[in-house]
Image (tube, rainbow, N blue to C red; front, side, top):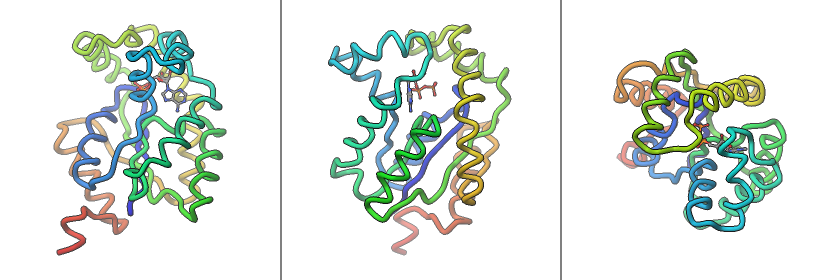
Length: 199
Ligand code: ADP
């Protein structure tokens, strides 16, 4: 059972690395941004509530986000572990997640922190906006999301750091190299792939 969180500023390559981690460790990703975007696309009530907020690059209110996560954690596939991506993003969300996990006698096993130079990632994100047509990827909203990350989310790393959970990963360079760094770092914590564990 592996319970992970991946954090890093917008454009650090979290999505790409998340996908790989979910495949390697056979756990589902719980990516709140993806869940919100799916709701917007399907024009659900939640989608309608959050569209303007997300397009502006602001945070969806904690109450909505926490409810969403609590119900996602009840789904069968999340009972065997998970990788959070993009949640928690505020201290309130962190505290909420602590409580939800503690109710099951659980806690996060590690926090993977992707470290990148902010200017470097603006150009990456503008490229992605072009490819994926994400309406929240303009230079202005990207800068806004980066400053929100610094102000709101970076303090979470300090909290998890005090718990000794943070694995700092240099996220510049080839995707494969970053994946290897993550795997090595997790292995140093005794977190290994299901294949290796049964061998
Ligand atoms: P990025 O990492 O590029 O910012 P995400 O897909 O993680 O992209 O999030 C996109 C948007 O979804 C955020 O800018 C925010 O509006 C909303 N969002 C996602 N996760 C959260 C969260 N945990 N709390 C509040 N808002 C969130």
